[in-house]
Length: 531
Image 1 (cartoon, rainbow, N blue to C red):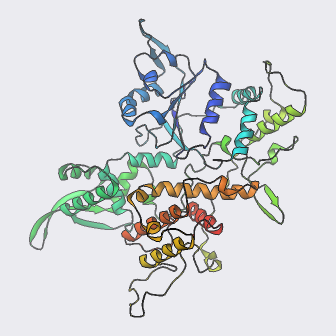
Image 2 (cartoon, rainbow, N blue to C red):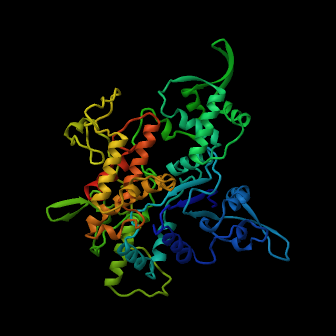
Image 3 (cartoon, helix red, strand yellow):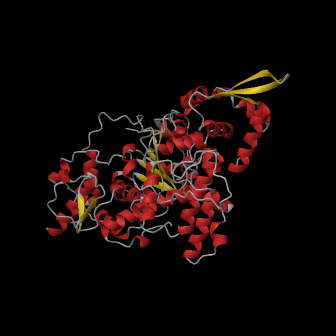
C-alpha cells in the first residue's frame, strides 16, 4: 500500500533526537534494501533515479539543500508522492515503469520546504519536541535499547500486527506547524492584511484611501524585511480576499478607497487557509505546536531502571515521582516505548538472546498493547482564580509611581501591572548593574535581537521544560538549557514583544499571548533566570 503522503519533521533546535528514530527505522527495521536517505534531491528527482527503486521509505534531509532546489523539484516530488507508478532510469538503459509503494519523509531544521496549498492532504507536518534536548542519560538509555539485537524484530512485529484496516493516509491532522507554513507561503500583501486587521473588532468595516493602505503596506515590508511590489500589483491581491475597491467622494473630492470588512476578509482567508490564531474569536488558549500530535517515541521516560514486571496498562501521565515531601507529574511514556524498555530489561536479566535469531516473537505485554492517548490536556484559564494570584506580576511588577511629581498620570486606563517604556528601561539598567554587565549594552535592542525574538521565545519555552525535567531527574538545569540563551536574551525577548503590542496600540503588563509561554516565563522567573 502506498501512503500517497509525505511526513515533514522539523526541529528548530539542534540535538532534539529526530534522526535517532528515523535512522533506527531505516537502518535496523527496514534495512538498506528498503530504505534510502539522502541530502541530494537530484538522486531522487533527477533523470537517473535507480537508487529509489524498490524502497519502502525514502528520507530527504533538507538542511544541506537550498530553497531554490526545493522549488525546482516541488511539482515533481508531489507527483512522486501520489503516483502509483514510477519511471526508473539507469545510465545507458531504457527507463522502466514500475509499481511504486514508497513512503517519503523530510527532516528539516527550518520551516517545511515544500509548497503547501490549503487543503493539500499529501503533506503532514510535525514539530519535534525539544523536551529531551540535552538529556544525555535519556539518549544513552534509548541508544542502548535500540542497539539490542531483538529491538528491530520487536518493532517490526508490532507494526505488522497493528490493525490499519480503517486507516486513511489522506486523513491527516492539520497541525499548527502546517497552518503556520501555509500562512508564511501566502503572498505578502495577504499576510500584511492579516496583520493589519487581526486586532480589529469582529464586525469592523473601514474605508481606507487606496494610496494610504499601500503606504502602510510599504512600511510593513520595511519592518518585516519583505520585498515590495508595485501599487498595481498590490491591488491585484486584494479582491480574492474579499476587499473591494470603489470610488467615493471625500471632502468634495473623488477618491479610490478600499473597503476592508473584517468578517468578510476573515471568511475568505479561512476558505483557503483554515482557522488561524490571528482570527480566533474570542481568543483561545494557544495549543502546543502539534496539538495532540507529539511523536510517541520522543516522550521522556524516567531516567532510572524500570521494574521488570511493570504493568504497561498502569503507566500514565498522572504517575508521580516522589521528591521528599513533594511530588510532581512524571513525563508521559507511551505504551510502545515502555514495552520496549521493559522487554529489553527482562531480556537482559534472563538468558542472553542471540543476535542471529530469526524467530522473534513479542512477549504478552507487547502483543496486547492498547494504544491510548495519554497526553496531558492543556490547562484551562480560570479567570475566577485571579483574585488568589499575587497582585504583582513576576515579569513586570506594579508601579504606579511617575518619574516626577509634576508628571500627570496617563489618561488612558492601563492594565494592572503595566509599566511605561521608561520604567521598563530603568529596570533593565538596574538588572544589568546587579549582574555586573554594561547597562547601555544590556538594554540596547539591536536589529539582530528583533530578528531572533521568535527563536528566543521558542528557546525560552524549551529551557522552561528543561528546568522542570531537571527537577524530576535531580539534574543541574544549567547543563540541559540552551547554551546560546542568557539573562539578557530572555529579558530583551520579553521587551521586544511588549513594544510590539504597544506599537499596535495595545498596552499590556505581560508579553505572552498563550498559556504555554506564560507558564514558561513563570518557571524561568521562579528559578532565577529572569529578573
